[in-house]
Amino acid sequence: MNLDDFEGEIDSPVILTRGKSYYRGKSVLSLEMIGPNQYKAKVAGNRLYEVTATLDDDREVEYISCTCPYDWGEYCKHEVAFLYALRHQLDSKPLELVVRPTDVDLSSLLKGRSKKELLSFLLSYARKSPELASALVVAFPSPDEEVNRKNQSIQSRQAYDDGMESLSDEVNLKHLGIQFSHACDNGIERMPNEDDMYGWDEYEYEDEEEDWQFSSIFKKKVEELLDMARSAIHKGNIRHGGAIASIVVHELCSFDYDSEYLNSEIEEVIQQVEALFDDVTLKTDDASWLFGQFFPEVRDYDDGPQEELLRLCFQVAETESVQEVLRNYLVDLASDETQLEGHVNYTILTSLEFQHALLVKQERVNDAKAFALDHLAYEDMRLIAFESALEAKDYASSEKLAKEKEASAYGARISIDWSILLFTVYQESGNKAQVRSLAREFLLHDNLAYYPILKKSYEPREWEAVVDGLLDDLQTRDGAKHASLNRQNPYPEVLKGEGRHGRLLAYIQKQPSLVQSYQEVLMPYYKDEVFALYRTVILGNGETVANRNEYQALAFRLEELVSLGGEAVAKECVQALAPRYMKRPAMKDEFRKVGLL
Image 1 (cartoon, rainbow, N blue to C red):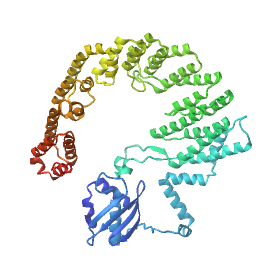
Image 2 (cartoon, rainbow, N blue to C red):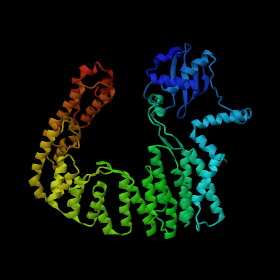
Image 3 (spheres, rainbow, N blue to C red):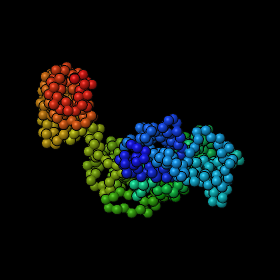
Image 4 (cartoon, rainbow, N blue to C red):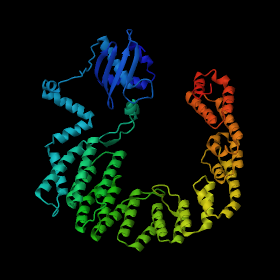
């Protein structure tokens, strides 16, 4: 590849276009000669990468390498940008190139720049770097009226009547609120995608929505505040720790970004706030105060994390009056939603689940049971009713709920296997006949885990009387269902477990590719037959292999055959494959590596 016309050697038009764009955008930050015809450059991408290259006297590129992780093609966009920059530099064309020396006296460099130049650079670079922007706003708090208004809002949320130990606490909370508010303003960054990581052209997918995440600096800030809250709570200062936690929750719920990933990160932080109070015995007045701090966020936040916010409020809802406030809100929440036929409305379902949980928390067992039974149209509520009945050992009710699951008009959040739950009922109630019936059905439908359960349900003599019939049924179903077989198919596994070696061999002889999985079981009884099966597989594969990976797999099979004592058969196979490997040096090389040539 020659530097003068390298474009023709770049296979990917996307990489060529992006590399040229990187060059024109001055992403090549430095370029220097490090030896005769040897060059090095720093190229800005998702990170700062280093490109090195060696040319000969005719400007042929003898070597080029980049430190980025891109490995989907021969050249990456950073290398292309470097080649454009190097060509222009060597041709001495007037196109401006940013050249940065290795050793710079930053103090002297910055003193020579005007305030306008420095401000312009910082603003421009901060737009590309959320971390720099976050660092700037934390280091230089803004005095503008909007920030003051926001700070006052935070202050009012932190104030409480009797929990402050001193004026210094109030001042510290105010300062924390201001700092965290500033950090939130620049606390997120665009998530790196595959384009950034592997050098693909992000502009090729302009229709795709960007996703966002917390920046590393912001995550550390969140951790710092939560550690402060945890320390205060462990020292018994519940309200001080709760006020710090409230600052975190309020600001996170003020983010205005439609990002599923960001919602997940917010949920995770709220879960950490919940954990602050897990092992704490709260006084009723402290619990009510905490509820007053967190509950306003529930009303204002109707996105994904709302469920976690409800969970946080539920955790500190200790008094009847507070629980009534929460219950009324849950009822209103459900009444404001509409339910489409056949589609579960998760807001309504969340409301119902928390209403039921409140009844349980109040130890109103019968009311909780009745509430779940009144809402069986929701499969999740049916599951709650089922689990309640099973816990109470009401096996008749739990069996009825599991069998009538089709009566639920709306599906569950996640798939529920009611047949497995029904099996649990039969196990716990000691219904041996139903346990056997369902375990056998599961096994016939490829769920091997139920083989030992089924076997254990019989006495040894009983099992001997039924196992042959079970094997016949498995064989019939296996032959009808499986076009391609693997180790997890129940029939050969049950044959193996029952020690039916002759029948297992007969099965493997019809499916020779399985010999590798069962050779250990069959070798003590059928060594020659196992060698013959290996020979069939190896010669069959030898006719179709076409690349290095397939040659290696074939050589591994030959090596395995040798390790079993079948060296003579392995050499026969290699000899039989001679017409193919003589024309394929790579195949011959792999055979040589395992000592068969």
